[in-house]
Image 1 (spheres, rainbow, N blue to C red):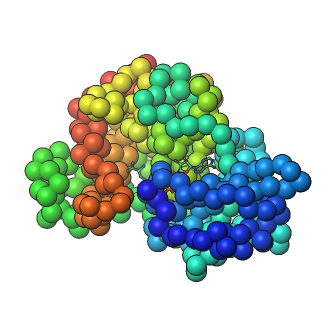
Image 2 (cartoon, rainbow, N blue to C red):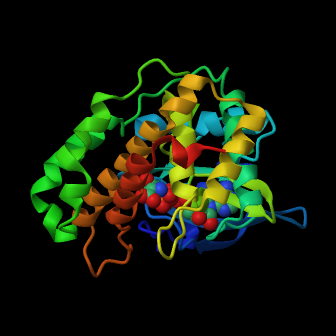
Length: 323
Ligand SMILES: Nc1ncnc2c1ncn2[C@@H]1O[C@H](COP(=O)(O)OP(=O)(O)OP(=O)(O)O)[C@@H](O)[C@H]1O
Ligand SMILES: N[C@@H](CCO)C(=O)O
C-alpha cells in the first residue's frame, strides 16, 4: 500500500479548488509505490471526465527538490515524451499543500507496468531512455544526486554491523561496502539529466509501446551511461530466480543506441557503472530493511536481489553487455 496520508474527500475537493480541473467525482488510493501517497482522481467538467494523479510527498522526498522534479516533467512532456505534465494551479503554481505536506496534481497516463518484460518492451524502454537524455539536454536546472556512490557506500558502512541480520553472504558479496567500485568510478563520461530509477514499475506500456515514464523523484544530474546501467540492472533479470536475461539486456542497449550511440568509453565503463547501480539499490534497500517493521504495511524489498546482480556484473565484465 502507499497511502500514508489519508485525505478526506472534503480535503481533496478543497485541494482541487485551486485548479481548473472541474469537480471531484472520485478519489481512490493507489496501492503501488512505497515512497509517497498517491490517489487516482477523477473530475468532471461540462459532462466530460478527466483523470489525474494526486501525489502527497512524504518525508523521503525533499520539498526543496520538488520544483526541479515537477519542472522536469513539464520540460519532457513539452518535448513530446510520454511523461505526465504537472497540472498548474490557476495561479500558475506547480504544487500546494494538504495537511501541511507538499502535493502535486499530475496528468494521468494510460498503460500498465510489466513484471516480466519481453525484449521488444525492453527495446522500447531503451529508446525512451535515450529520448529522455536527449530531450533533457536543454533543461536548465540541475540537481546533485542524494544517492551518489560515496553516499551509498557510507550508507552501507553505517549498517554493516547488522548485515548478518539480512544475509550472512552480504558482507562477502560486497567487500568493504563497495569501496572498490568507488575507487575506479569514471569521472569524465558524458553527463546530463538522468531518471536514475527507471525500473519496470516506473514505465507504463500498452503492448510494446511505452505510454508513460513516471516517478522522477530521484532524477538528478549524472552520468548518462549510469542511467542506462541502472535500467539494465533493473530490467534484465528474471524476477523468479534472478537469472540474467541476455535477450532483454541486449534489446535495451540496442534500443538506446538506436537513438544515442554510446562512445567506446561509455561502453567500456558499463560493467563498473552497473555495479555502482546495484550498490545504490542494495544501500537503500538495506536502510529500508531496518527502518521498515517486519509486519508493516509496506513490503520490504530484498537487498540480496541487487547484491547478486552486482556479483554477476563483476564476474561477467563486458560479456554482460556484448551484443
Ligand atoms: N502519471 C501517472 N499516470 C498513471 N498512473 C500513475 C501515474 N503516476 C503514478 N501512477 C500509478 O501510481 C503508482 C505509484 O506511483 P509512483 O511509482 O510514482 O509511487 P512512489 O511511491 O513514488 O514510487 P516508488 O515505490 O517507486 O518510490 C504507479 O505504480 C502507477 O500505478
Ligand atoms: N526502485 C527502487 C526503489 C526506489 O528507490 C528499488 O527497487 O529498490
